[in-house]
Image 1: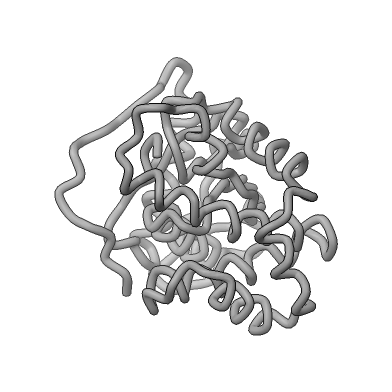
Image 2: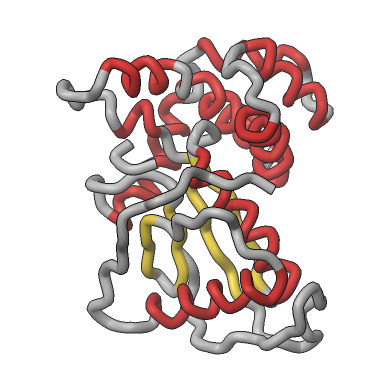
Length: 226
C-alpha cells in the first residue's frame, strides 16, 4: 500500500514445484513488515509462505503501521484518511499479542485477520478482530488493545525497525534480506510453488547488488486472492 530485510546470503537452493527444500541447503532468513489492512502486503505474505515450502527460508514477521506512517500528512484524500482510522486497531492487537505471548503468535494472528479482511471482506471492526483472536486461541480481552495506546511505543519501534531501513516514501510490504530492505514485492496474484521460489531468488540477487534501488511499473490490476 503505497505511502499509503534479509541476512547476507547469495546461495539459493533449487527445488521442483511443491517440493520441500533440499536437506542440508544453506538456511536463509527474511524479515517481513506488514500492516494487516494492506491487501498488497497480504499478497506478498502469502508468497513468502510459498517460498518457505521450496527454499530453505525462515521468515520473521513484524508490524509496521500505515496509520502511523501517514499521521502527519495533511493532504491525504478523505477516503484514505477514513481507511487509516480503521488501521490502528488491528496493528495494535498484533503488537500486543507479540509483546504478551511471543513472536510466534504474530503470523497466525495476521493470517486470521487477513483471511477475514481480504478474503471474506469482513468489516474491519472490533467484532472481526475478536473473531480472529478467538480462532488463534488467544485471550478474548486482547481485543482491548485495539483501542488502547498501551503498546504504541512497541508498535512505533517495530515500525521504525523496518521503515528506517527502506525510507519513508514507501509503504507496505517491506522485506529485508542480506541487510538490504525493499518496498515490495508487489504482485497479483501471488506466485506459488517453484514460481514463488524463483521470485525469491531474484530478490536475493538484487539485494546482493551494490547500489540497486528500484524496479517499478504501474499496477494494472487489483489484488487477485486465490
